[in-house]
Each structure stands twice: as C-alpha cells, then as structure tokens.
Image (spheres, rainbow, N blue to C red):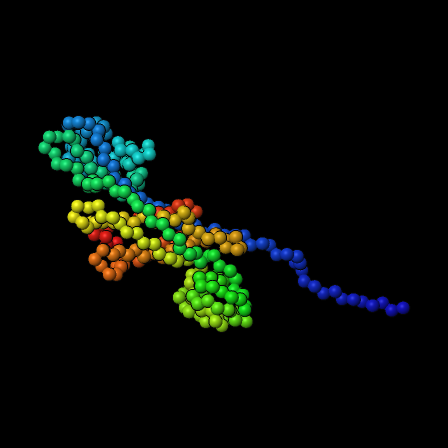
Amino acid sequence: MTEENKIIRGSKGGGSSKPKTPTKAKDSLNSRQFFTVQDLVSEGEIEGFATPSKSNLNPFSSSYNNACLKDVFLDDTPILSEDASNSNPQDKDFNFRETKFKYKLGTSNQSKMGGIAKEIRSPETVGGTPSNADNHTTWAANKKYKVNNIVRASGVVDIVFKCTNAGTSGGSQPSAFQTASVNQTITDNTVTWVAQVRGSITGSVTKQLADRSPNLNPDAVIVTLTWPQLQKFEDDGDIKGLTVHYRIQTKYANQSNFVTRKDTKVKGRTPDVYKSKRQNSRCIF
C-alpha cells in the first residue's frame, strides 16, 4: 500500500469584498434674495427709534443709523446685535449682511424717500421642457437610433452621446467614444453622435415681455432662475453635484438678433431649491 500526498493551494481572504461606502458631495449652494420694505409708522414728526433716542445720539450721525438697526427685526431677529458698538460695529455683530437702511423723522421740509420702485413689479413665469442628458440608455450594437436619443458608452463616465442623425449603430462600440470631448461629432455606422456632459440640460426658453413703461422702453429686466435641486445620483450610491451652464440674451422689437448679456454657470450641489437672480438697467446683464 502506498500513501499519496496531495497539496492544496489557495489564497486567503475568500468571499465577497467589503462593499464601497457611498459618498455625498458637500451642500455648497445657498440662495440669496433681496427685497425692499417701506414702513410708515406715524404721521408727522417723531422722536425716532428707541435705542438711539435712549442713547441721546444725533439723528443725523452714523452712530444713530447703526443704533436704529438694533430696533429693526427680520424674522424676530435684529439686524444688529444689541451689545454691538453704535459707533463702530464689527462684521460679527450683524445678523444680516448687505442691508441698506434709510429713515425719515417726518419733518415738514424733508425730502422724499428714495430707492423705492415707482410701480409694482409683477413677475412673469417662463416655462420650458429642456432635455436631460441623464435620460440615457447603454449603447448597443446593430441598433436603430432616433434623433435626440442619448446613450452612455462602456468605460466612459462623464460624457454621453446624443444622436443628431438617425440610423443603425455598428457592430462594435466606436473607439472615439473613449477619448471624446464635449461637442465632438462621432460617426457610428449610419448614426451620428455628438458628445455632451452627462447630467447636462439642453434647450432654450423665450419670453416676450409686454411693455408697461410710459417711455415705451423697459429700463430693466430681472431674471430669477430656479432649480428644484442640483444633484445627481450615481449607480454606486454616490451623490454628486452638477454644473449648469446658462446664457441670458435679449432682443428688442427693432433688433434682428439676440444679444448675449450673461454667459455663466452654476456649480455645486444642493438638495433644496436654489435661486439665482440677475438684474441690471437697460436690460444689460
């Protein structure tokens, strides 16, 4: 009888690997909006605000103006903290930044309050249905594609491809997909693709504004852009931010072409509503 020795070889650490922990990009976008309030508190001349009056401050001094902000509340919070210096308040003493404050005491010879709009502004909503590049499918061989179909190529993460000429794809994925740059045109058998950023929004909306001003020319346009949220969810569970490129253009009735007033972008992540306002006189953004 003979004894046969058998050698068993293998590697340690068998079984499935530990799953990747999803990551979430920082919430980096916060909206800022400004409003104007005109408050009439009495008829005729008054003593003024409580805090500067108790301190016997000169009503026409900067210290008086600063002290008034301790008596002006926004959402039950004073603009300037109660313990702040009236003559030299520090940035940390302000609960609200970028505020402008004016007051009148009701004298018979005072000038009118400036900076108030002569008419009520009525916002007009501009709607649209842009296409979302996240609405894509995986590229397939020998498949018929229609114009505006969007595909994602194997091994390509941040770029997707939009069909601009309908046809049938080839038997293998175009090698140009791997090195494609934004706006590059790629021929795939009888299909033509254009590369674009994954997660991008494409399209345009146009609104004609009725003229309400007496001089037949609007003196300004305020454009408020609103996004319900700016974030995208990856297949591996990661939550990333988005980059939105947008352009604001204007055209008067006597002009043939649109003029670009603002060409910029918003970049970051927010799970909440984000608003961006653009305004300038004479419709120049």
